[in-house]
Amino acid sequence: MAYFNNTSPAALQAAAGNSPGRTNIMASRIIDSTYCRECADNLQLLFTAADQAIVDSSISVKGAACRISDVLFNVAPFSATPGCCRVEATYLFDVTLECCPAGGGTPLTVTGYCNFASQVLLRGGDSGVSTFTSAGLRSTSLPDATCQATEPVLVSACLAPACESQGTGYGTPLCNADAGLVRPTLGQNTVFCSVGVFSILSLERTEPLQVPSYGYAAPLRSSRQTDPDEEPCAVFNRLSFPIGRFFPGYR
Image (cartoon, rainbow, N blue to C red; front, side, top):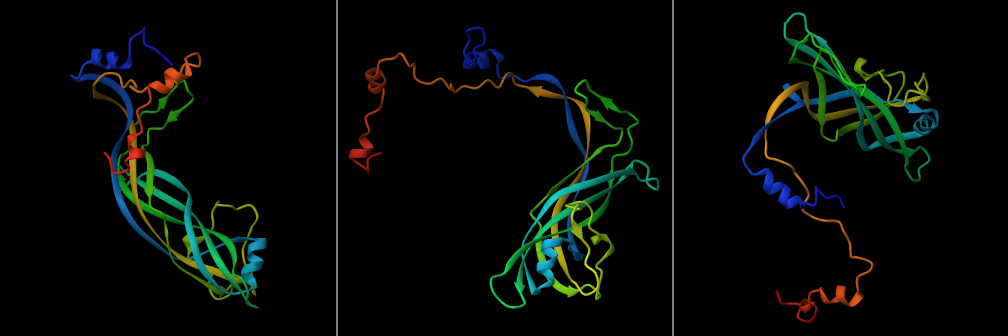
């Protein structure tokens, strides 16, 4: 248990007072943001060799789950509009499917991988200033992009021979699990899916800000347990009488 010069946390808070002061901090400020409703259609899924073999022996597939494993960003100044940046966010999806075998039986579960790239234009150009810290962190003169996204909605999933379609260009698998993934060839089955995502894309920049300060946020609850040298009966005598156990309706 830590003490502040034998002063309790409550006394420390009281000494700080309730009137706000001013404190300088470094914090990320949102420069611009936008909400997005994206529905990526006809995305081609890639599988490992073992899962591709299951897909090849199936007569149909059913979507079970979908999650975003990562979002990759590319932020660049937009020359046509000074002070703006082009933000490209590439969503990496892991899609779980249930495959129905051609001979019947229990459906088998496989995981496919695909991605979808979305582009937006946001305010927040090149500041011309780079930030370095002793902790080894570095911030470029361009703002940082962030993405808040809901769980994706797996709208549909369908099975088709590889020769019928190769999916949309933005469905080219990227790096969810590139090692070990195989691309179906003629005669093999391919799975295409449609995924919907609700997200908020923002541009943030770390800046020095002055904010109101109300003193220390010292904890008021102690984690100190019973003194091991204390008499057991003394501990028992401090317990409240459990009247509620005798009279359940009593409050």
